[in-house]
Amino acid sequence: MTTDVYTHGHHESVLRSHRWRTVDNSAAYLVPLLERGQRVLDVGCGPGTVTTDLAERVAPGTVVGVDSSAAVIEIARASAADVAGVEFRQGDAMALPFDDDAFDVVHAHQVLQHLSDPVSALREMRRVTRPGGVVAVRDADYSAMTWYPASSGLDEWMTLYHEVTEANGAEADAGRRLLSWTRAAGFDPTGITTGADAWCWATPEERSWWSGVWAERVTSSAFARQAVAYGLADDVALEVLADAWRAWGDAEDGWFAVLHGWVLARA
Image 1 (cartoon, rainbow, N blue to C red):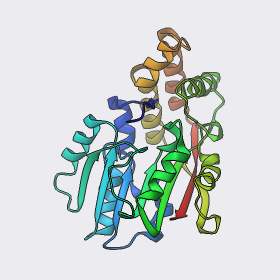
Image 2: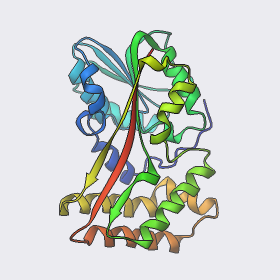
Image 3: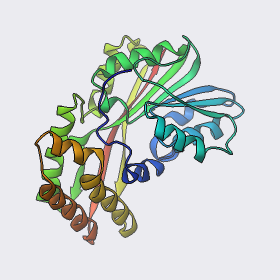
Image 4: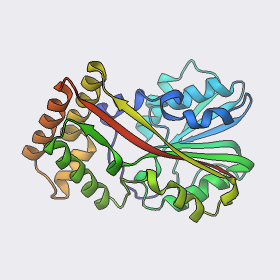
């Protein structure tokens, strides 16, 4: 088991964000390659909403969700109790508990940005993918996030987020690096397709949800505990960041976009 530190942790505010994710909003780039009967691995599955969505799309195939957290695996199992063709196992992205060539598709969403050695993780994903199968990865790029109106508080949040992830040995600006990492992992460049897409929150309901999630995360999640433990912030500073998030959420013309890079790589 690796000793990588997960910046976000599994506080309820984080899980609330993760449960929002579906294939349509988080893995649309992969949809054209999904087929009935495939065997799919979802690495870093979290609470499993994308995993179960994948299972419905490849039925009667199977999807296995893997996460390093035993607690979140139990949450995923409970939420997917009535979904056919899906199973969840605790496992490490750096040492996947599967034989070589075991899957048609290996998918990882918002995972590589949290690993100290994403290239080795990609090699491990390729190992468990059958020849001709596909490894699909998508990650946010924090420096490319943008918002309106301007907010010095959100600027400070962005700076702190980079400082915390750097202390964790991780790369917050992963999206722009996925192609480079995939090539470094030894995938044939002729079998690599890459691109970008975005999430955007702009309606009052979307702003309320996104700002509320982050206002809670900056004070209550593992990110907050790490920021304090590393001496990068104190509780007062974190409350100021939460206020900045709430102020952005209240702005009638508020707009926030998250850019993601993605890669499809043939094994």
